Image (cartoon, rainbow, N blue to C red):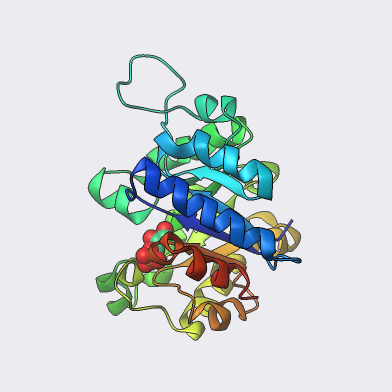
Length: 252
Ligand code: 13P
């Protein structure tokens, strides 16, 4: 079902103590809100997941990981499997973030396996797609996003696809302070929904949650979320400040 979701991607930030402080501050702020405008998910680094889950228990926010292995189990030093996350009751996982594609060589083919791993373990993938600046400037942004969707997601059955959250994150907008305009975000989100509709039918397309990510902050979230095909945000920098994050959560 289509939902309003605001997810914080902490990336590789914060010590354990800082993470605990930030999570407690988020929990306190969420406690004060009578009616939450969106579902809240926080994705801290792996070593903080258990602590995050303990804090989340008291105030109802989801906890997600930032990556998962494509492998089931075994001799894969340093990897974390989907079944391990499931055994800790982690309910969400970001995959395909452009930073993982860029620095860790993740390909659409690997992501196609990772998304299956997550779904098989009842974890909601937050699947990131988005074009580079030079691709937008060459007017190739629609083609790039189409290819990422086709190669990374369109091997799923309609039932499986229902369990995926998509995050459109134009790479040129990530951490740059250069947000996509409201029109650019809406245009791409509508296009993504059209692709889904052609592949899986209109009702699946209408049901899918599509988040925007890339310099989304407390000041611009409301304008971005007002677009009919933008169902929330995947927030980087601004998710590291409790007050800003909560303002974004309430920006619908
Ligand atoms: P910023 O919000 O810091 O631009 O990061 C966005 C992002 O990469 C979320 O996954």
